[in-house]
Each structure stands twice: as structure tokens, then as C-alpha cells.
Length: 177
Image (cartoon, rainbow, N blue to C red; front, side):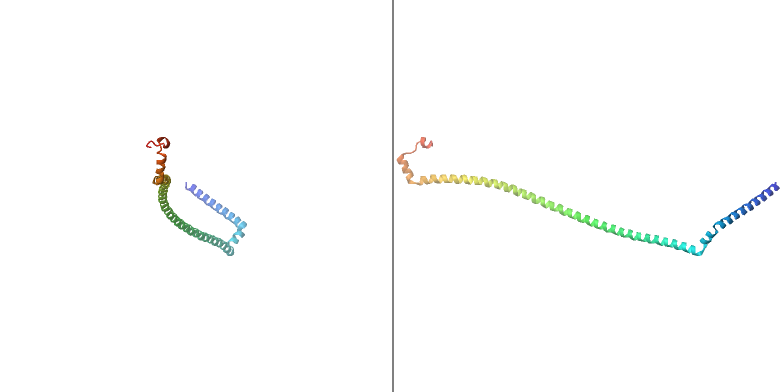
């Protein structure tokens, strides 16, 4: 058994050496094929230029970010200003609505008063028209009565009656005559 172990250990050592030799051979092939490129990459100038390029890209991105942040801050300020203006406009709107409601109440009160006055004026107009009709009727009656009175005050009127005679009921149409 120990001999088997020794043989397997020797074989493992041989396999390791073979693998190592194969990997070295492949690395040599890679270096032979890509060695000049690797050498270019490792030179200080190319690394510096790559770093400079990457730094410029980073700086450009930082500038873009800071520009966008300033833009966002400006937009936030504008939004804040707009919200303040909107709040102020709402307060003014509520005040105007309250003022309008108050004016509407005053107008409604005045409208009620004017309607009452208008109805009183209509009643007064109707009453005035009735009074004018009554006045005209009374003036006609007064004129008639004044004519009759002037006849009765005229002494010749009675003389005519005495000469002609009192009118009969048939002529005057009065039953008392």
C-alpha cells in the first residue's frame, strides 16, 4: 500500500509539473502574441492619457450634474414662488368672494326695498287715478249744482214759474212736482 501511495504521489508530481510546463508555454505564447500591446498599455504615457481622458469625462459629468442641480434648484424656487402666488391669489379670491357675497346681500336688500317702494308707488298711482276720476266726477257734479244754485238764486227764475206755472210731473219727470 505504501508503494501504491508512493507511486500515486509521484504521478501527481509528474502531472503537476506537466501542467505547470503547459501553462508556462501558453503564457509565453500569449506574451509573444500580445506582448507589444501589453507593453504599450503599461507605459506611463498611455496610462496618463487614459487617466486624463477618464478624469475629463468625470469632470464633464460633474459639471453636467452641477448644472442640472442648479437648474433643479431654480425650478424648485420657481415652484415655491408659484405656490406663494397661488396661495396669495386664493386668499384674494376668497376675499373677493366674501366681498361679492356682502355686496349681493346689500343689493338683495336694496332690491327688496325698491320692490316695496315700487308696489307702494303702483298702489299710489292706482289711488291717484281713482282720485282723479273722483275729482272729475265731483267737479262735474259741482258745476251742475252751481248751475242749479245760480238758477235758484236768480229771482227771475221764480217769476218764470209764476208766469208759466209750476212744471207738472209729466214735463219734468219728477214725482214731487
